[in-house]
Length: 249
Image 1 (cartoon, one colour):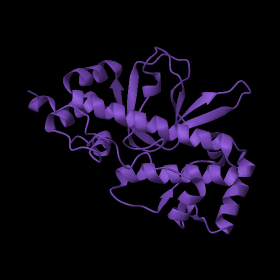
Image 2 (image 1 turned 90 degrees about the vertical axis):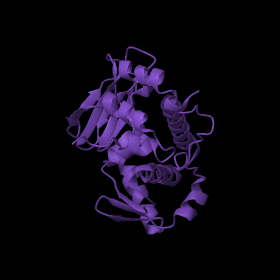
Image 3 (image 1 turned 60 degrees about the horizontal axis):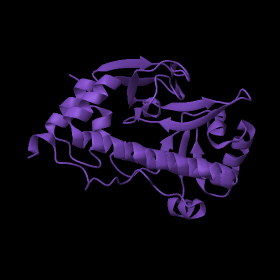
Image 4 (image 1 turned 120 degrees about the vertical axis):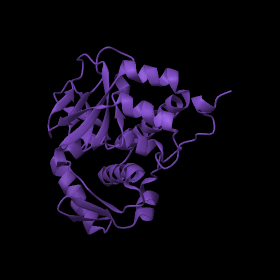
């Protein structure tokens, strides 16, 4: 039995898909690939003709710095369509790496183009979702340049929590964090030593609780007020989308 697409599940948080729309996604992303933790799925500057849908696991997109370091731009979770930042070129704009053992589905640019042609409402929803993700990334990167270490880490944790809720089926207050402290540091512009100290300080202040890799936000409302975090994932406007193809006049 074919796995239900995590992308379909995510999209249906915003809009009920038709059977034709679900079938179009299932057909386009039918080829699954298992990716072990640490494997590079896409290399910055390398050729790219395929996007990926995350079915299980975490990945991240990063860019190489002249100093030899890296900047992690975005983390990817089940339900994400990744590689859209490279869709305008023949070369990958970022490096895509598995954080944990993953299952991804390949979605070629050609098949994505077919979806855009045959299912314009679905195409519009994918576009809107990508736009929301870009704003969320801009919010987080702005926090790196304008806030201290605690605010940076708090913003990242709130962003992860909000994103995971889209496919978790309800409100969650805690999550397993499969990231190393170096991963976290490369995402928020801190050394791994500073990340360790800052997480400890957040725990001492009662902002978070930790148990192994499990992170719990103690008082989400207070942390949101402290950081000014805006949840860009909870809702996506769909009132402008065209009618489903089957119902179009």
